[in-house]
Image (cartoon, rainbow, N blue to C red; front, side, top):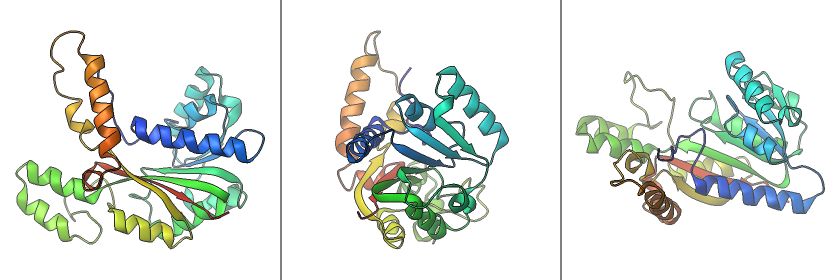
Length: 253
């Protein structure tokens, strides 16, 4: 089966960026890197990071998601490195000390919070000087292109000018989508400096569903998809039509 590039797990490029960031955190200070996963759900990011030796605090209001997270952590022996805060982003400051996190994750979150600017300010406040915030969001331009390619041209046209990148009354599952300039403004407004902007899922969300051909071709196909994604993810305008946008923004030291 081909790799799924779901927002909850991210592409290999996203994982490499986070791995490099945590390596830098280990160099900056002794001890385990401190990670805050806001809206961490069932632990798609938190459990692997805890397994790699990070101390992870997961902020997640859903009891069902927390139950699954705890089970997954126990299965890999990482439950002692995960702390769960059963609350939402509005309560972040009350649970996490200011300037304490080496890395804050906000993946698939800014699309659904009531106030993205307030959320990003909260992320910045708990990030240590020199630390970083990782944001993964739905891309408005990808949503336009997907509708256009599906022949839904009136929707695509309306979405181009929709202020929040969503269509009212269209059974949308998110409150907003972002583009590169909007993300830069949002993060800069909280005093964070964008260190990296890349796409996540330029073509992989589509091509992983295609038939790889003869038996034994899957591994080679996966390598080709990954190699293309790695290049396209940081190459505008291909980056700018990816399904999701990934940003690493740093709090000045």
